[in-house]
Length: 507
Image 1 (cartoon, helix red, strand yellow):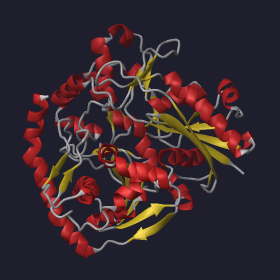
Image 2: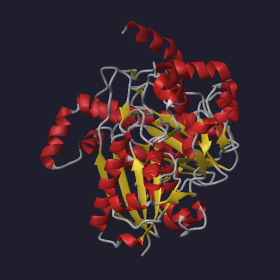
Image 3: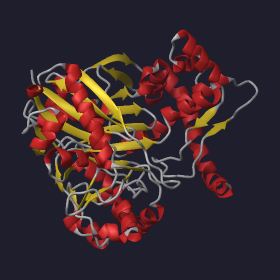
Image 4: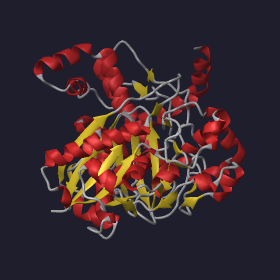
């Protein structure tokens, strides 16, 4: 039976997943690698570590699946977006990759936003952020000129794996959308931006649509992986673009909500829609001729994890004794607390915020804390505060003409029935779980099945593969009650914005 590999170059490890032609997961494996922080605010990795991990993971998957390697008919790629990988004329890596969460490029990002103003939002679908690729290129030019002058090509993290697999330096429209150098509407590099920044087009990789084949698996790579040579390797997509495919969010009206460490609201659009205020990201979709809108909050599940680690040592110890997930014990305390947590509102800005407030100075707040509040109130206010932050992005999507009809929720937070209920009631939409919740690697494998010819289009593949389950219908009475607390939540950020910056200056 034909099988397809999805390779996901994450921030902490490389996940490889193998599916059959109907989308059943045959085997998966994750191999970790180190994160380098040579200076405060810097975040780097060695691209060769990604390749070593990918090789180990692919071999482990093939061994564990016990399939004939000759049955693998396609490979799809995905991974962390916005990172900068550079190679020289010999094809060797010039310096460690600068990652999406690196903060050294604040001056370069500010320079681009000041230079191009609103035009950069219209062209690229986003304001320029420190994590994006263009400021990284400018930083290398400004601070490591000798290394910059050696650049033959740059690429994003997953594309380095594509380079090792095929010998070709190429990327896809979805990942390119996160560089701040891409004309998202035209689905091509922006010659205007590139010229204004005095960059050479020669260092830019060729851009493909996500299901297109970037090349065939080269003989040397095939030997290292234990596969046959000549397998098509598709262009793939960035992690959230691939996750959107894995959730089946390939048509307008379907919204995917991913509650992992960060929180992502994702929806497809048949036309290029961008927010003139830059409060959302508008990127090319992994499905050709479509786009997607995306909101990203930095501390969704991360807020609950902070609370667990900081204030729930007893629950962690009890959970260990009885073999229970500590999150189950923690969230159970919130189930009896009423909507609005009896006047306690949590602002989930523990790591600053990305959308709709691009504010690195924002911080977490429990507002309204009183003697009547206990741990259960605090937990519920965290769940509600994260849902409020996700709702911010959904409302902007609706302002831009999106008409949502259902939500598909995934990620670790989706395992909480209470969190799913809060999202359904606040959004006023039916919420589904996915039969297969494997995120980006699953989407990459689906793209591989399309690129290798098993399915005609991404939409065709999604219709045949993606299945939902466990629907929760919204309680519209609860929806109305949530609206009042949501309005208060929104007023709090506006009231505290200046104070967040003041506090940052004090420490």
